[in-house]
Image 1 (cartoon, rainbow, N blue to C red):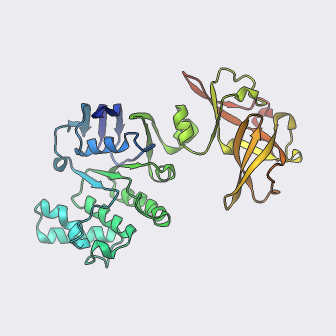
Image 2 (image 1 turned 90 degrees about the horizontal axis):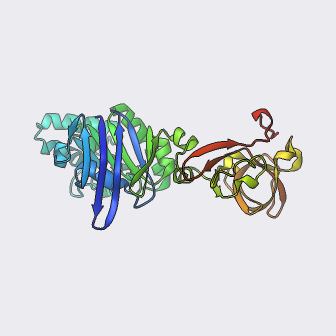
Image 3 (image 1 turned 180 degrees about the horizontal axis):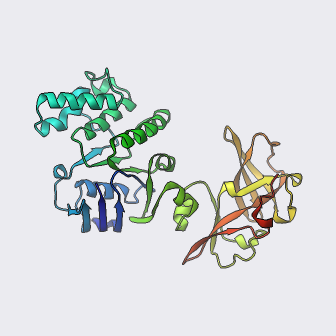
Length: 352
């Protein structure tokens, strides 16, 4: 299903939840709506589903305006955060529910349910009740039930929020593979950026009721279009005096700079080929991250975050080190751009 949303607007009393939102989604794509709580993600999802009515704007499915269509006529499957399974029904009965509403014949229902049971890895659980299943299994039942009537669009509202971290990681991979196999256009809401980056074809960053940016996870990470997107995606440090750093003296037109950990090198003097491009800093905190150390280093009035391999000599809190900033995202009120350290020789890394 090809989707177009044009100038969507929604108030809840005095609260302006969605502000002039427009976007389009190609058939078969999996889109993640990502942003902070209260940003408008779920309101957009519920308007697409027909559970809320927009104050203004158009929702168009396959060229047809659906603003006034009830949910049951939109060919939508909806997976809720809390599963919303019928407790008194078995797995089979839960999955079959939408098919019975459509008045399909029993053999067709049995065939479709069995197909989905196998597709979602629930074989052998058909006669169990929700309370006899794990959280991950209950969510699989919810997916199967949503897919049973063969909807054109699948909507998921924070589908993994109620599941523990280990199972959530496994279900991300499973969901990605399932949707690729089924080929259904899908939109899911999340505030977990790792989840969005891992699962989605494209991400829409929603903040304050507006779409800040839409693009592939890689594009959004590498080319954030607003300071909010840059600070929300990935780890970073924002500073206001980047022109005080060596190699960035000509950046006075920027009001702020965002520096990601991977754009910073830290170490002893002997680890750098060109010390003139480095700053002196002081290690303030060390955090063990399993495969590496996360290092908080103070450079002048700024505190930067970077990583250091476990294979290198371990640093100590209070130790003086050299810091090389390779690049930074620069922002002012009108634009954003990437600046490279001007002192780096021929754009070749000087870190051994």
